[in-house]
Amino acid sequence: MTLSDRQRAVAYQAASLLLGYPDAGLLGTLPVLRRALEGLPVEVGEPLQRLCDHLAAGSPTALAADYVATFDLQRRCCPYLTYYVYGDTRKRGMALLAFKRAYRGAGLELADDELPDHLAVLLEFAAAGDPPGAHLAAADALLREHRTGLELLRLALADAGSVYHHAVDAVCRTLPALPAGDRETVLALAREGPPAEDVGLDPYREAFAPPEYMGGRPAGAQHAGGAR
Image 1 (cartoon, rainbow, N blue to C red):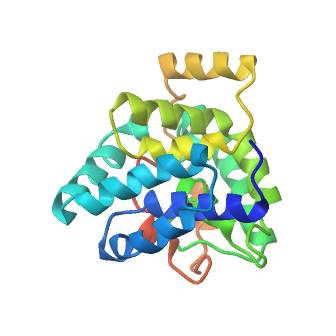
Image 2 (cartoon, one colour; image 1 turned 90 degrees about the horizontal axis):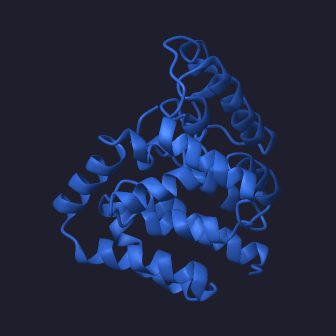
Image 3 (cartoon, rainbow, N blue to C red; image 1 turned 30 degrees about the vertical axis):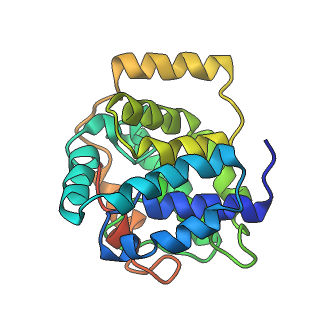
């Protein structure tokens, strides 16, 4: 399936928003998102429309409780992509620096309460720029490098019966299929879980989160949640 840069930017921006906390601001944008998704191929647009439908039909209280239960209380559904391969280890710290450098190279900074590998933040970065999709090449490199983590998140959400798997599924459909070797890695990580280490991440936190805004909006306001 081939998408134009504009279509990919629309898909990534929609997925980024839909993976955010379902507050009044997000729920109020659903009509606009629905119209934007009409221009996407059905393979990508339909899963995102399903998530829109779910959010539009739910009560704010129930939606908020489901979001917290999914991303805050289940480590298997962690939206931080480097966690799946590196856990909380020194190697994860170095992987996070690659995200930070990509954002900074495009002139963007994160809010001081957000790590750079949150899927919604990466998708927002991919969709940002003028023209739309100007950052797609840099975002693509990160998405492909952490395709294993993305696939593990998709599988975890699907196994949990979470409607949020539609957003991750749509993103996966914009990328090449996993090679056989990567599929084996996904299965192994799913069985064993990420590596554990009690030290190594904290010294990087200040560097990961400069006190600025990304794209003119605090990233952490929409994209809080999940194990870090």
